[in-house]
Length: 59
Ligand SMILES: [Zn+2]
Image (cartoon, rainbow, N blue to C red; front, side, top):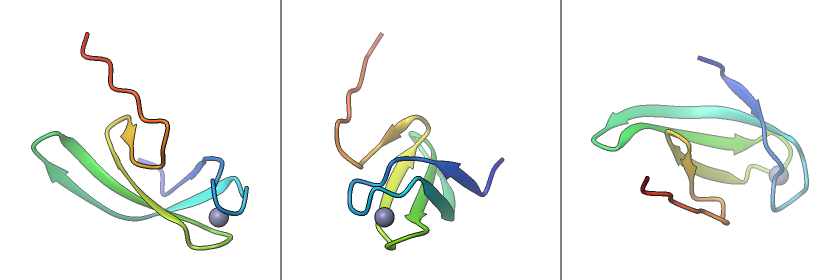
């Protein structure tokens, strides 16, 4: 499991996020990511994240 990932930050446009926390929840593994550049944070549960543009396919 990686402690860092590439993701385009909606705040500063940076591409480097660090994992700051993770925990098991009923939906899966909940992971908190923080932008290395500005500190912007978002929560991801498995492949679903809260950073915007979330689409949940139920199939
Ligand atoms: Zn940022």
